[in-house]
Image 1 (cartoon, rainbow, N blue to C red):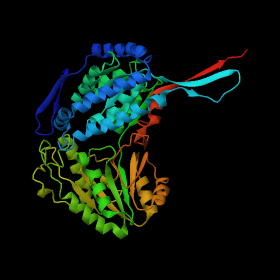
Image 2 (tube, rainbow, N blue to C red):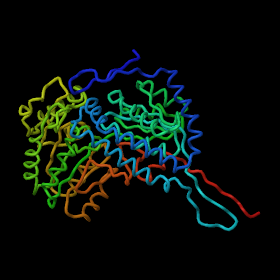
Image 3 (cartoon, rainbow, N blue to C red):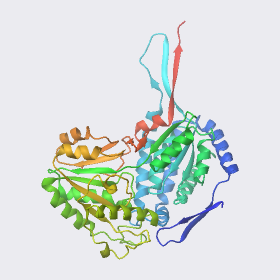
Image 4 (tube, rainbow, N blue to C red):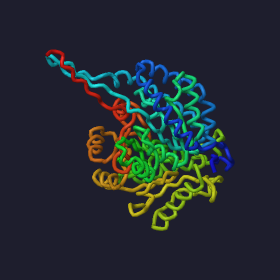
Length: 462
């Protein structure tokens, strides 16, 4: 079948129905992108900046409509979905503001008889593959900087959030972007593979699972094109004895359960120094019991459904396995009326008496469950934080900045937080280590992955 349906987790109904792109449509889109990019790369950076600003203006103006669409496509409570467009605006505006300086030629120190400089040349056509969990925040990291750098962009969004790709197209069309510089394609996994293997793509920016990252690497093998891969994590938080416990509890609970735990850099495991362990667990459990699980279109819901029943079942299985192995579950799920088997509605859960022999502490859960372990000291916390195949972010809660930096130097992670978590500062490089991926988006460094250096070596005296 050439059609697909987006099933909303709100009530299981069909929310969107679209056609997958045909092979002919894919080829035509790539041809158009290649041709459009040849002209677009010649435009002044200031013009690209102004056009991207107008596109963001359009999306911000449509925030209310987009928020409702997000809630129905992927289940985040309507109280929170407008925040995604606010985040998109923050990141896009920052990247626009630094584009001119980041992309201007680099002048080399003077040398008599020579003129030397390095230009940042666009790569060509950038293929962006974006997930459903933060459909605008994950995609904007590549879409806007790629266009600012003079590339053409082809966006493939998840079939769970197809309207996001269409909103981008509306925004860029309203802004006056030349035809072909931005396009979207609704495709199957095989369709995405064919795009990567078409030899018409110069860079792939992928956000998704480790398995998906392997598939992208295999599809790109032998083509000598670069890849940006953000593949998720099992992000830890460490609570030192000198931490502000109230702040640590509020921040880590939000980091663990916001978006129903479906965050690439969400908190999935917590380590607490033994001196404050009992107080932390008690306060954490009290706070989590206050969450309201319900339909995400209700204004008072603070925890919506997971995206699919199968995703909720994975978390249910991890939790049950941990309990069977000796973990203690602190939340009475019966107190959450909407918590029901065979549905995507899943109550939050807090586990203690956990260890790294349990999948819930080592495998990505991507749902509303978190394990909390007691640790003796900094060194044990460091060892446990590093005992993971992932390394996207990690956080520490402490009053000692020097200790935070020293401990951070020993933790294998792309971003190290102190007294916060689960946030992307667009001025900082967004990157991961180990199975969390490779490459970099955001910050001025992000442009380096969407351009290539071209050296000019001019001998002016003969």
